Length: 631
Ligand code: FEO
Ligand code: CA
Ligand code: CA
Ligand code: CA
Image 1: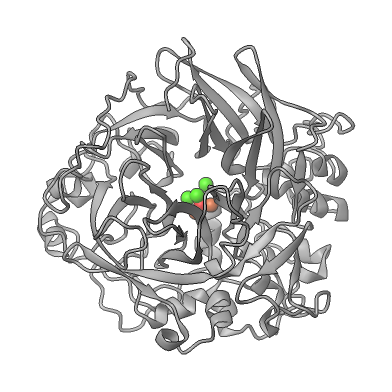
Image 2: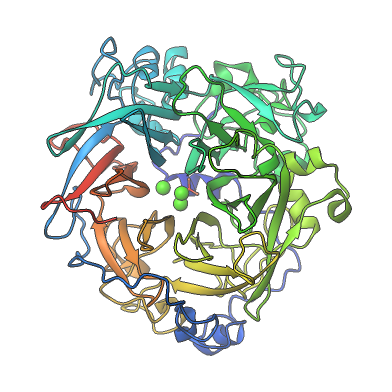
């Protein structure tokens, strides 16, 4: 099989090896210049570290209607244990794991074979990420992205630790997508309701409708679908979104890693190169089972992935809709807010080194209780341009501004954004909007290429603005406020809420902002979700070596930030080699559901069952022991 073998690498490491930027020639290196604290400040952040914290001078002071809240728990220390750690007075339990059956006719998870294609199609998918809990007809329906699979775990029964049979490959496809599952509380504990009429598995083969400006375009036509309107499946869904009209948004991220070419001399297009579609896949071997994934035979198939997918969680027979109006890139999440004038605004990050931050504004207006089903079909896409003076603008991607048609903008969005000079970012992950105030935050997780080399489109990545450190190994959280308090505004003011770092190792910019201490430090913020009280939950997907630059940081974790004071405290630590990602609450806010993704991705975890068990990604429920609400 023409697949790569280094399967003990993390997903980010795969990406780095398999999708490097172009060779750098004549680029103005600024690494050395940014290495000292003095030059760091010269690089665009004139106020020094205290201004990075909200309540500093860069933005208007907090408004009085925003809630002031104590954190309400005793922070936990770091941990390197292979379990979940929560504060005193809180408890946790597993709700759903990779391979848990959703129907009573499906087999329980088999730790020897790790399941079959058939059992996986009837069970909870792998590597759960973004999720939302919906209430409908008195039922609780949990919708969860199943982002990807770790080959060495899924195929740990094979000598190669890779798919070796057609059934193995299909098992992998079936472990991707989205799981829709009714859950219910039994005493305090939540559990899966097997055979619920809402239960559904959406996989890499489920039929989808393509909607919006790219629908039917030549670039979307394939042998199997000459209309360019119906695609099969969704995969690599990372963060998520939910709409006020009760639908779920799955966000296709690293879709490129599943395509390969049977013709090694196949000449890739510039667009394929920009999106990282290559001759070799990342070890999934899907093209061996399904010709769609062979780019030499189906060069347009990659154009049918990389979108936001809207799903009706209450109708298992509904066809998910790919919303091309929200652009095609490596989508992280989709944070939906309603503007002052009732347009739907969706903030969207493109998680790749040096890619961009976007905003969609619907053409039509939201009406509470009305028919809102097609609001994401038509609208204007914008991309963010940050200035060093803490101002910024959303630049509209239009035929006039890009020289591309609306369909081309929807399909090759990165190229359109490069044309308008958008700001290259340090890997935009989740965006979260404050429910109490017109402002939003985005995790810029890390970017070892900052100040080192351009993005895949050749756009330079200078140090400055919201990306203030070269070779950014820790990440930061940017915050912006629309100038008139309306999310549809084209102008905004920005600052940095937190710059992650390690003050026990560094005394320069890599120590982080003032609100980062030896007690709360972390690296690579990724998941970001506001609760109903305006507390900001920060989840990490970073390095867990616990040494050198990452000494004293332990396993990946979840923290809580206070947007008013800048205070950050650690609430939870995950098991070994996991990422903490995805959060949603029960209707009464007494349970917080949190995702534990890829425990043991390098082979050192048996979470959650312990002993010699195969490690399994899981959704956990966290509650206060006294049962009171905390979100
Ligand atoms: Fe799937 Fe950007 O993390
Ligand atoms: Ca993520
Ligand atoms: Ca990440
Ligand atoms: Ca990860």
